[in-house]
Image 1: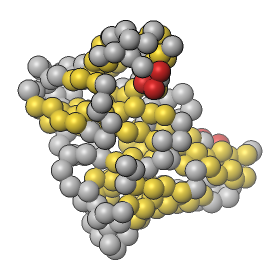
Image 2 (image 1 turned 90 degrees about the horizontal axis):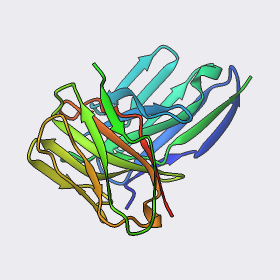
Image 3 (image 1 turned 180 degrees about the vertical axis):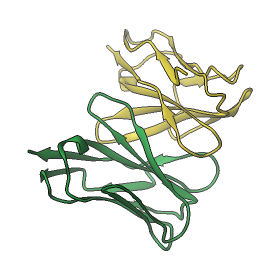
Image 4 (image 1 turned 60 degrees about the horizontal axis):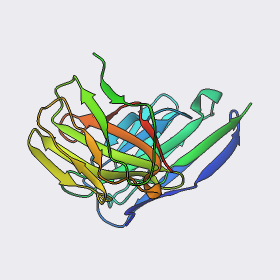
Length: 110
Length: 111
């Protein structure tokens, strides 16, 4: 069954507002990845987190990996219309399999 | 580099028919995977391979077969299509357990 849960499922924000999506795993993860999928497109890799408590930034995007390596978050500051899409986390407990979250669909209202 | 390519882009099958979804990558990646994406379910791993000649099952392997005879190719076979296999199928490749590169997807409808 699904081992990685992601909330919220949908988020509508006004352009310029912030956005956060959360990912929670029932088991400790070796690493976690984040992907973005535009409508009609394929997932595109954003980042990978490996260390407990790790924080990485990419321009307006901030990614965090929890201390217990069971949760992660993606925060976007001052959203733009180009941020529209579905954001997925993908966690790897052990071995070779990644388990994807159900995704958060972001709509940005101009 | 073409990256990860998938064919066909769209396919309609009747229940009970079989077919093969093709996936190829030109990045010399050892890891390749097949996912299916259904509304509200995210991406679920069907089968994966860690190198030529080595395959393993993912979360939802039933009704699908794979083989990996070369590093470049990783076809997915539907043995006897069922309406429950209507989905969008993505192939992905990666070097070690890092960034996965996804193909453009195959949209399959089984009637």
